[in-house]
Each structure stands twice: as structure tokens, then as C-alpha cells.
Image (cartoon, rainbow, N blue to C red; front, side, top):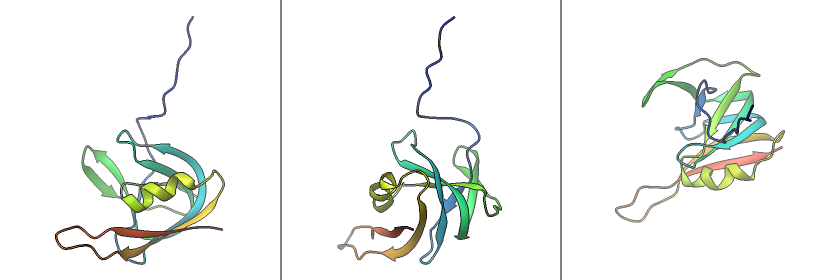
Length: 122
């Protein structure tokens, strides 16, 4: 009998994603896993400690529904914006981290403002 080779891209039932779209929204949790999306964006899974924001789960491609989570539940933060794409890979398993939306940087005329996040490790 052969062996099965596992890849780093997984499919299936993922923890809810944290949405930190509004300035002041934050999530605090213990890093339990790290990975990347199929598109190459970093992802961290947190054991939730505190949250000011919303969580959502994909029900089909491009369709999301809001879900309730409790302290200790697993949630995911996806680094789909430049600031998080740079910071999330620097976290380590078991770090206690707080990720806060701090607003947007001013943009040059005709450009989208860059979303900024404060990532603190306790």
C-alpha cells in the first residue's frame, strides 16, 4: 500500500472569518495554526479571547453568512490586505495577539487608501 501526501491547501469546514472592516474593530486570541489561502494570502487561526467586529462563514462561492462565536471558539484572520499580508506571517503558534483596524492611510490622488492594522503580541 502507498502513502498519502498532504498539501498545505485545505478544503472543507473552516472556522469563521473575522471581519475587521470598521476602524476600532479588533480580535484578540491565541494563535493555534497558520497557513495560506489558495490565492497565497496568509491565514492565522485563533482561539478567540475577545472580539469587536463580526464573523462570517462561507456558504457558497462568494456568499457569506454572519455567525455567532464564543470565547474559546476558533476563528480565522485572512491577510487579504497589504498591511496584514506583511504582518500575519510574523506571528508564531501560541502567541497571544490583538489585531486592530486603525483606519486608512492617506492615498495619492486617484488611488485607494491603504487599510492599516495594529498587530500586538502580548
